[in-house]
Length: 285
Ligand SMILES: C[S@@+](CC[C@H](N)C(=O)[O-])C[C@H]1O[C@@H](n2cnc3c(N)ncnc32)[C@H](O)[C@@H]1O
Image: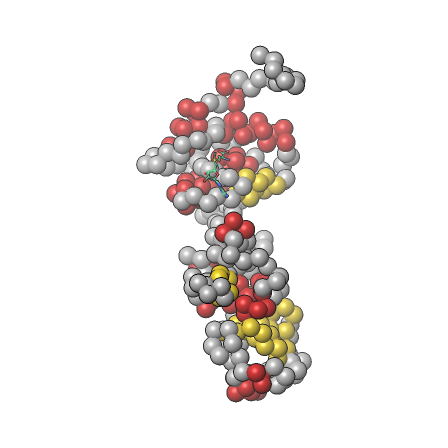
């Protein structure tokens, strides 16, 4: 058996860590119509996580597949991050992890670890790259960004917390109590600035991100900065590459509140938090 190097010192037998058939049965319980092709048995992942991590540690599976690693990590009291680009993220991973959190998943290692449900998780979509090159080689905003998505993305890029004010349209986000951001696709004129300036309270400052603006806006008010969107981002980020357009703009309102909270004993999200969470998620629905 020996070729080069040291031969494996350990053999994991299938009656200890499961086998392909067992893995298939586990994922069939989640989605019978489309059975994921290459699942791992939960017992195998349990062995690996037992050796490699402790309760409360983070587990990352950046090729989530059918979600086995996240499911097992959850049942073993680990925190986890799963990344998946396939459609089965919606059809397999999401329902599976919902069943894990609400305790209805009694397959895999559930019985041996006495899993009854608990905890929660957030489910994010990765946004497309904000800017793309048009056929003339100019950088333009990707048309998949609607006004809300663009405002959220700009707030994130510029270090503001996206949190649109219900009454004052130009207060879309803030970096401090008195520093605001406003993103618009309209042409910004001096009149636009005058109107906003009238509404601003002493000590407040504003960054306006827009596609284009009247030249005279530049030095109109010291407390209002106006910038053009493609220009202000280019040079800071690399755009146009699908594989690392890492543009998550659904920033949680409360970092401790899980997105999916099972009904029952787990804590419910408050009405306001839930409303905000929904509003944020809609950006990428
Ligand atoms: C063999 S499966 C993973 C199995 C899983 N880790 C497990 O333990 O059962 C590989 C998965 O990686 C996903 N994948 C491939 N390239 C990816 C990428 N760049 N980002 C995210 N997921 C990717 C595929 O869609 C596929 O579902």
